[in-house]
Image 1 (cartoon, rainbow, N blue to C red):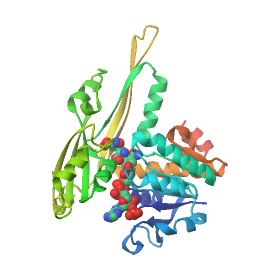
Image 2 (image 1 turned 90 degrees about the vertical axis):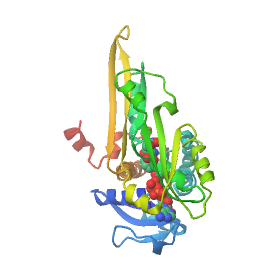
Image 3 (image 1 turned 45 degrees about the vertical axis):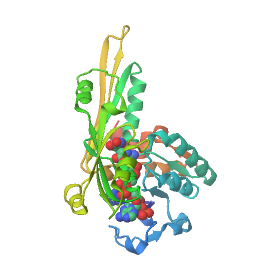
Image 4 (image 1 turned 30 degrees about the vertical axis):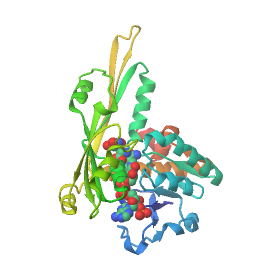
Length: 328
Ligand SMILES: NC(=O)C1=CN([C@@H]2O[C@H](COP(=O)(O)OP(=O)(O)OC[C@H]3O[C@@H](n4cnc5c(N)ncnc54)[C@H](OP(=O)(O)O)[C@@H]3O)[C@@H](O)[C@H]2O)C=CC1
Ligand SMILES: N[C@@H](C[C@H]1CC(C(=O)O)=NO1)C(=O)O
């Protein structure tokens, strides 16, 4: 019996979830919800209804898991707690500094409704978080680093698009080569946020918008740009479509740690991603956690979970016996 999935919010991530469902063995898309006029939102999957967000709660009995595909800057802090009372939900909330607050809000709503709310899954936060946890648990005497890019951060691009006067935006995250080389060579430098990455933004502004204000709002934006050296380029819609139509990304988590009576031995753990499509990869992670959310709730669990709280086997479409026979 397929897991019945609803998508809330139809952008890059919404389309990615749709593709992940199509490529899965055990999930089906039963509804898409949007804040726009449903008639204006064309989805990829035939014969699946697109509803207004106002209709979502009335459809709760038809959906096993609602996947929230809105933006972290302004959508998910409101939408995930709101719908966690009525649905098992999954989101990719990635404003790291605000994850504890988001967890508390979703936990209260999910427990009230007897539902499971999985938050902050994807790759960072998500797969990279898991690898930072494993590496720190295994090598407590050590130092770890996370590098992203060069690639398009959807969270940062979304955050720019929310600024008044912005019509479209892409943000490229660029690792600082000297920091990368130092870490790769086995050094364990103390690096500030600013010393690890720079951020380059390409923005299409509305006609007549105040470009100086937009640039200032980007560069001073807490949690997204304030701690980075950031450049902003204003371009045309044609240039955006011509030069920035793909969403590649990637990065790696690396930990160098020591063992031995006198900490004489060094070990390196590295986990890396190279992504053609940031949204499609992220959505594939999200769908695996939607499977987990459904199963946990079927077992009678409720409340908020992060990737740290969910055993890996819950993510797989294979049974425990199959996993032990083929993947252990
Ligand atoms: N944890 C992780 O590793 C990752 C997390 N993310 C998170 O995913 C979030 C969503 O990213 P992404 O899907 O790229 O964001 P988008 O800007 O594509 O979509 C966000 C929302 O905007 C609305 N929207 C989409 N297209 C349009 C349009 N043309 N006109 C008006 N509204 C539109 C949709 O809501 P509606 O249909 O209701 O209008 C949609 O849900 C990011 O903010 C980021 O935080 C992304 C990648 C990795
Ligand atoms: N959440 C990120 C996923 C990774 C990419 C990233 C960055 O480039 O700053 N941080 O985390 C995204 O929205 O793409």
